[in-house]
Image (cartoon, rainbow, N blue to C red):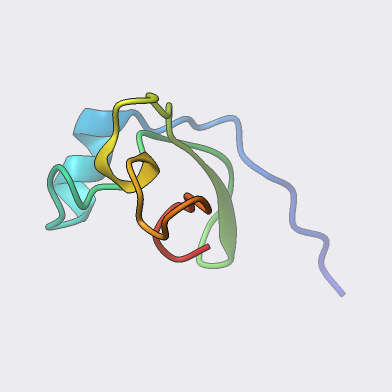
Length: 67
């Protein structure tokens, strides 16, 4: 069995925009780290208090889409 280790490659928002058709407000990732090609990656997104899904997606129980 071959071990797969995350690469040191980090993709920023502009790199991600070249790979995905999504744009704001539906681009829910701003940076990718710990990339294992064709297997996994860790996605990062900075969250602001004023983002729309925190303003009552479910009253009294705000959640991020897909949570």
